[in-house]
Amino acid sequence: MDQASPTDLSPYRVFTRDEWAALRADTPLTLTAEDLDRLKSLNDPISLDEVVHIYLPLTRLLSLYVAATQNLYDATRTFLGTRDGATPFIIGLAGSVAVGKSTTARLLRALLQRWPNTPKVELITTDGFLLPNDVLRQEGLMERKGFPESYDLPALLAFLADIKGGKQEVTAPVYSHLSYDIVPGERVRIERPDILIVEGLNVLQTSRLPRDGRGVPFVSDFFDFSIYIDADEEVIRRWYLARFLRLRETAFRDPQSYFHRYASITTAEALAYAEGLWSRINLVNLRENILPTRPRAQLILRKAEDHRIEKVALRRV
Image 1 (cartoon, one colour):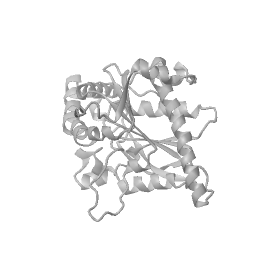
Image 2: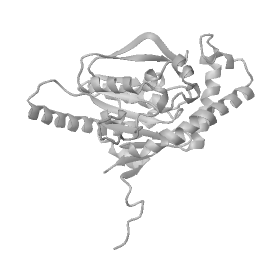
Image 3: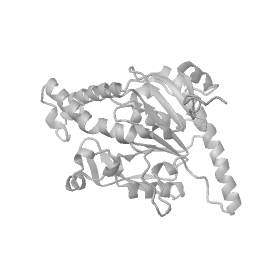
Image 4: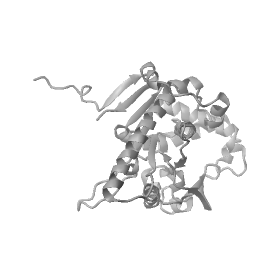
């Protein structure tokens, strides 16, 4: 008997752009070009054509997953004899810095909110669960910001447990990209959503299993569906540098910005600084922590250099 090749054993079915677009069926386009302009992030171009070809089929798939998952939760409630309402469906969204996670998360939220039954869809980023800068400095972790150890993992797990448990109102810390820090005293409130999108660098990360066999949940244990946004390492680097230069001309000019000092340096100096951030921090995090989680995703969106998604891989086992 011939041995199966690694390709034959892949847990994913891979679709070309056109093959995936054909799965849209009759899913309507409910966004306008103006809506899309409001949703997309700086230096992350996206078109209505991309929405039609990639995201409408994806929202159709998600609608089927939500319905099927709620049926499973209903079966469990019937077995237990409980009547505690619908269990929130949680979508995890992972990928490198500068790969377009924020745009994708906001776009999915907007599309899912426009389903005929108008479900309540909320979005949270794990940035809010980063440790405050003062704590990171005390622990020597400022150069590890965004790495798994820079997050308040117990707080994130408790938040997700409360969401999944159906708690009426759950709060989370607020992160400011302007001050590059947690905002003291501010909380965002999530009130029992139908769907929650959780976006972050390391949301598919696992940890070392305890030798005593005790249950230690991962963040991804709370997910009903997970997505990884993928691109070549060198392409992501170029996107990161381009975004830094755009921010230098916009957000960094605000005197309140943590990076305000870089608004007045030369382009060459700014590029050198951004290259240093990329090579010392973001590239290391990508290689050590983010990319290794890609095979754990149920869906992988593979981007080309122009940001268009060229391939979609859907887990089949």
